[in-house]
Length: 307
Picture 1 (cartoon, rainbow, N blue to C red):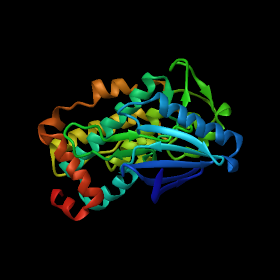
Picture 2 (cartoon, helix red, strand yellow):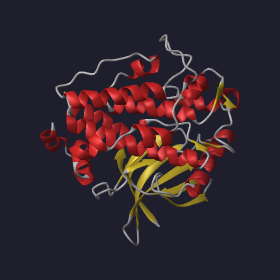
Picture 3 (cartoon, rainbow, N blue to C red):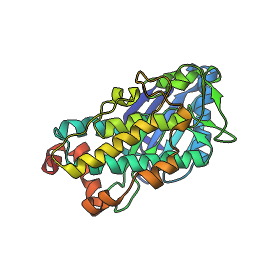
Picture 4 (cartoon, rainbow, N blue to C red):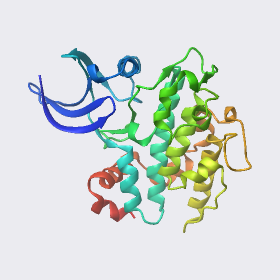
């Protein structure tokens, strides 16, 4: 039915392949998990991922098509995405040596879409618990005007809850230690946590997007933003303050020890904090921004003209 074109990813649970349908020629991504080599908990996680992809069919999540088990392997057929956020961040930093306004447009647009995607999960009582640049993808039709191009993936560690107000303990979710770099400290240190661990992870991803020091965000360190654009400085300072509020914790090395329960919800971040005014007035249209993203990832030499 499918012809394998390339292997595009590999993880602890299996590998992801780029394939084409032998009849139609359509291209997809297929995740292959060899069930016989997985532990019982790992098998539970990959099956949970399939269940959540079926449940979360939306523009915010990578599109699920079909899944099947053959020769003791689980296959998950999904949309083929253009690239991952981790690659864009690395290339963006190489391309934009000095932070410029266009760089802000790109970072802002991605971050806003990312927060909206996590807000969608929380409205459906899903905690992702594994948010990191590796699990954020850029969809293929990114050149369309006003198209959502940020998609969440990898729901193997996600948790469905009865109510977002419920709290859980790390001892009942030891597998979350796999994401220590982006994981909220209340989950790392075995205390109670809830969906706000996703907000903490968003703060650290945001720090990378806006070229801030992630350690400063973790430790609650106040930083003065200086570029050659005063208006841009003001907006970046607001974003920096937002990220600090999203990462508050009693475990910080800063004197600012604040209960993690005071982190803002995603809907508050989107509706009250992430103001589109500066962004829209400067950018003009979304498809231009997407074109820049295309150049950053695929044709960095052309992207240099925006620097």
